[in-house]
Image (tube, rainbow, N blue to C red):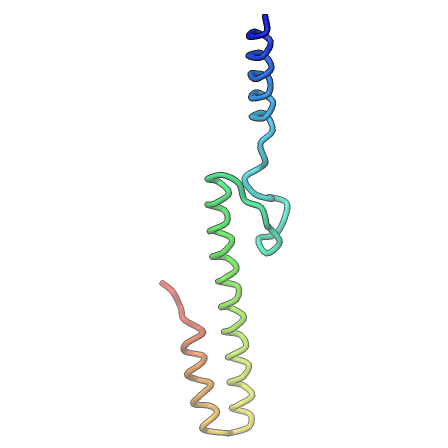
Length: 96
């Protein structure tokens, strides 16, 4: 009788634990705000979010470099223009 009770309790516990799984990631949040990833689907989404955030950071660097180029051209400083053009070429890489 005790064996049946223990086996039933363990079975119910295992079933109850498996019924409540966390979602793979926080779908309602933006990629920048997500902090919890679970399972294979969560890991895949985390990689996508990291790639998205890296892409956004690169876009900001490119925009900043272009604005610096406009400022350098307005000042007419040839050395500064060369430096900033090199930075624009580095930060504004077009991927095919």
